[in-house]
Image (tube, rainbow, N blue to C red; front, side, top):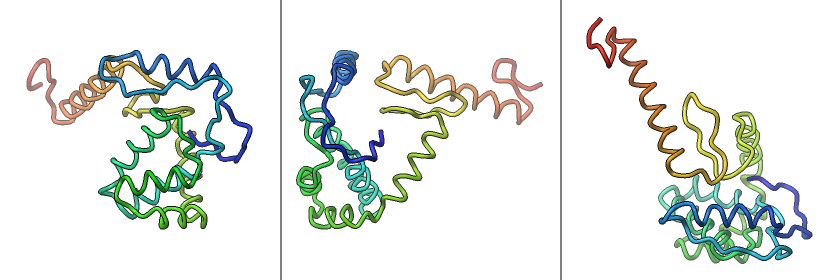
Length: 178
């Protein structure tokens, strides 16, 4: 979720704790979540992390998945401030990329316009939180949704696509040729 303004007064609230507690207990294979105390520092802004991730996606696409997961782990698993260039640099090095290059990209705001444009696009799709999954023909699934709900949405979309292909070809999946 984009938190564009840089505010040093951000703290974890019971709202954040509740979401993390719910997400951590959903499935047996749920990611590890560190549950912060209310009042603990919260990242001042998400722009640095998003700008860094956009740089990785563009300049090092083969490292994007590992970088995104390392950011996730730093924030949700370690309660680290992913608006801090030192934290982002350590994550970059952990993912075999240059901390100095990442810091330069962020300081120069090289990808800021793209991050803000992508945020506006997400808002236009109805995405107002994270995580978010967009399945064709359905409203976005926002938040730590149970696996069962995600699977059902994907299966319904796949079935709708198969039905549409069958209709376009003059057949019905249930009845064969028309």
